[in-house]
View 1 (cartoon, rainbow, N blue to C red):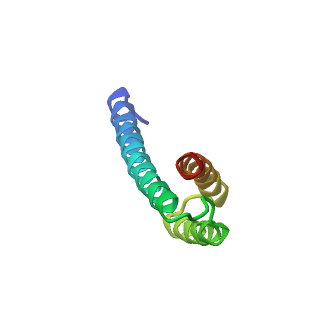
View 2: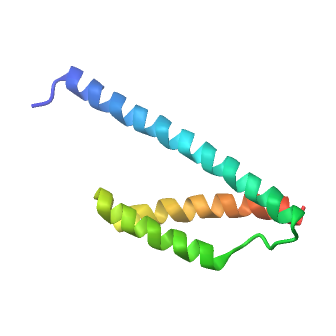
Amino acid sequence: MTTDRELDDLRLAVDAADAALMDALARRLAAARAIGHWKRAHAVGAVDPAREASLRARWAQRAAAAGVPAPMAAAVLAAVLDGCRAEVARLVDG
């Protein structure tokens, strides 16, 4: 049986994982913004379907290896790609 202290510790672990996820999202968004600036400077389109397909395949492999359910990983990646794609498009298209 889980004690209140054990539950508090488990929730602290969740909070730490959430903080790490937010930090990772911030780093990813910063990289996407840098890509957007590069693409604008070099007149390259905002969206790269081949790159996105590669990311999806890599995420599926990593999710399987990490024991993360495929639908969960796909949903997270879709949200990340949507947000980053919008940010890159904003930078590229002005």
